[in-house]
Structure formats: C-alpha cells, structure tokens
Length: 328
Image (tube, rainbow, N blue to C red; front, side, top):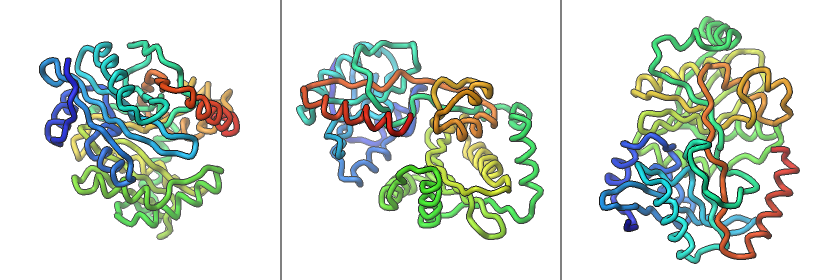
C-alpha cells in the first residue's frame, strides 16, 4: 500500500462520493477553510493499487498545545485496519507535534483503534440523523414537534428565509452564547467557513423572523447527499420559530436531492425521551429538540490520541480539567 498527497479536488471528491461513512469535515472545502484559518494541512490518499482511502490532516495550534488532527476520518472503502496502521505511521513521521488526535467517522463497535481515549472531543461522537427518502416526514415526529410546525406555518408573523448576512447570525450567536454561557465562534471564523463552501453552493444561512425580528438562525452545509445542521442560534421566545426553521431546512434539503439530514451532535447515553429527564448534560435540551423530528442516532468510535512525546500529558491534563469545569 502506498501513500501520496492528493492535490486534485476532483479525485478527492469523486472518491468520497462513493463512500458511505463520511461527513463534510473531510470534504475538499473543509480543507480550504482550514487553509483560510492559516492552518497547515495534508490531504493524503492510500493506494492499493487503486485509491481505497483518504485522510485530511490539520495541524492545530491552540493555547492548550499544538497537535495533528484528523477530523471525522480516515475515510476508507476497504481495508480499515491496514489503512489505519499506515495512517499512524505517516502521522508519526511528520514530526510536527507531540501527538495526533483522530476523530473517527467509523461507527462504534466496528473497529478497535487501541489508542489512548482523548479527554475531549472536538467534533461530534454521536449524531442524530433523519432519513429524507421517506414520503411522510411529519407523522414519525414527536406529537409536540409536529403540532408546533403546523402552528408556525399558520402564523403570518413568522417568516423563514435565506440570507448571506452573517453579521445577523453572529449577533444572534453572541446573544445565545451569553444566555447559555459558552464562547461563540468569531465572525472571521464563521465567514471563512461560509466563504469556503459558498463558492460551490454547499452552504446556506437560514433566518427565522417574528414580526421582522431575527429570533432563530441556522447555518447548514449541503454536501454529497446529506444536509448538516452545523451552527445554530436562537433567543428565548414563545413562538415556534425554531421548529418551523428546521422544517424549511428539511424541505430545502429534499429540493437539493439530499437523502439524509444530519442534526449534528447530541448528548451521549441518550436514546429516548425518558433518558433526557435523568440527564444533567448541558446538551439535554437541544437533544430533545432534535430527537423530536424523528430519526435515529449514530455513534462513532471515541476520539483517540496517538502519543509521540511526554509533552502530550500537559495538554491531556489541561483538557481533563476543562472538561470537568464544562460538565460535558
């Protein structure tokens, strides 16, 4: 098996189009976004002798330490074990950091990486997905969700539309972050993401207004047959704007020929509504919201770290402490 860097967008995207286990975090344009963020990247292919796997590697420079990161990868068509061993070897030989972090896109229970579990995860390890191929999407929903969508559709004061005004989204995100006590992404970060996908019409900003005021918003990536609910923001209000917003996104996804809608991350150890009542996880509320639209959960192998140097443990204990503080 040989490894070589891939510099042709068509070759990269054509391979991914034929593979089931993937998210947009391995798309060509996600790599372009990382370059806008001035991060060093490698796009490598595994050939045996044809292309059977790809891996996007990003050098992340953070206050907690510098490390190599494989976001929701590697993506393979066959020979997982062999590709994984080659990837580990390649990462080690880069000599760019004290460790590498791999956020797998392979389903839990399908593979054992035999690496050290990461103290935190950067991208979702458990997601909520909806099959868009079904003719009737309303009936499988939770009764309350279905009712609120219909209520929203009847309210003339609620308007759902698309926009390229990221400032509106970022303003709403900052208010949401203040209410829920988290650090929002910067405007520049969001703009770099948006611009990277916009040139291929792979992203859209949806705004939900009530009497002209933006109260709910979402940034959605449309890539290779799946719509991904990547960023969301909303204010407390009594109107069912967020429910109608998601419904309109689902309709847009179907128009674009998407077969799945990925609601992105949900709280761990939650499979049904009853579990949420017992959970103190900060994502419990948003998880209930997402589950209300019907669908199923998908859980990936836990994010794991490949350690190259004892310096890794400085980052490890720092992240452990931060996880405890954030209760996630």
